[in-house]
Image (tube, rainbow over all chains, first blue to last red; front, side, top):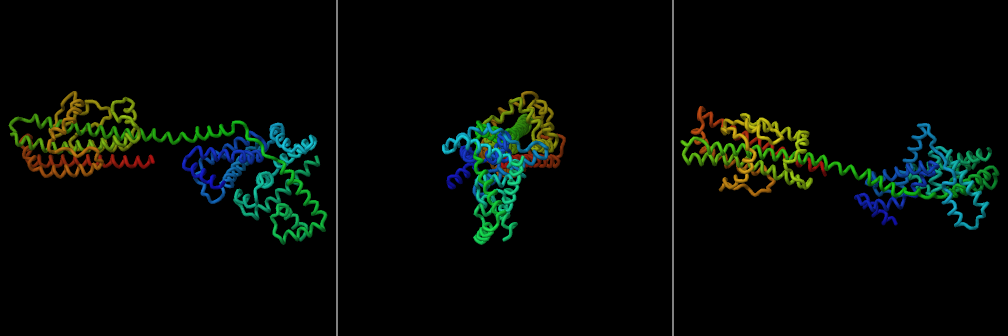
Length: 193
Length: 321
């Protein structure tokens, strides 16, 4: 898989637009989801993730093959989202705004169909739970949110996260620990109200 | 291990990112500490909840919208550059063509004047004059020819268009063209005695009417200079006879100049006598000086301009790449 990917990247660097498009197809859903989890809504996620691939188009020649392409791309994605998020905060706009669950309903229904063991009640409970978590994640500081997204939502290893966020594994450990404790505090506060 | 230490490591413990030593110490502590055990269970359930946050689907049109943006916005800029280069390239071609026309006219006038000199000069002298002026003309013609060829080649590289002078819009471009053309104008103006006073991009007859040159005794030949010039340029190779020009397509303008210069200087002694007889009102020595100086200067400037043009062409080629 890596060899195929590397040859595609080399072709794309040389200007092969078909190869570039194939790379986009491989990663666009994942990048979009990182952005969606950072911003909570489709509109902001759409703009940011498109921006990520435009940056990729402009900068793909600077990929040195010294890391995996995915972590390199996710670093661009995270930096773009965090920068955009901070920009909105500086402008006093609502940087994280959660879409109504109905926007994501189709994907949730697909998932539940795959697990026929869940009763309708269980499905509702899970939907509500997901909404709560998304809301709580939205209240995290952006660097805590980023690391929770990468570890718990996207499932990256500590090593991969250290590459993506360009920090040591020790920093990943401690930052993730603090992020989860912060999330716990938010959820407890939510359930209290 | 105390509670604070354990609670700091719970996150890594849940992810199996602790050392074996840390793991056993934490297990031991959790067995005996309810508070920490509660904390452990809470963190674990929150992590499980985040695992239910699944992937959402890509919005409709995301991919095609993205591809359009990339191909629309980011493939255009490279197209722009050839446009500007095209202007520069055409300016060079235009300048080179103008040079060839101007020098061709000069040479032709010289020839015509020599041919129309008073009949007292005998045929030998006349032939010698002719050969001398032929040679200077060869220099000029070759200079112009090689410039033109080099410029034409460049023009073909850039776009398949004709580098012709005939299109009206070109005038505007030429008026805005680079310093290179200005340099060539300056250098042309520096040739002695007022040849080519006006290097006017619009090829009209007026400037040539005013050309006077003591050395060559060129008189204004009135209207129709341009057409005559074109015809004469075509016929010149036949007139030259033995002194056939080098194969066209040679891009080494410098060596052309050198060869003709050497032959020219060699024959100069013969030519000066002839010119002495035909020129009036000037001493032999003055005539010699003026003639030598004039020819040298003209040749020198032509060489300089040719080299300048070639260098400019090379630079522009490099910039394009």
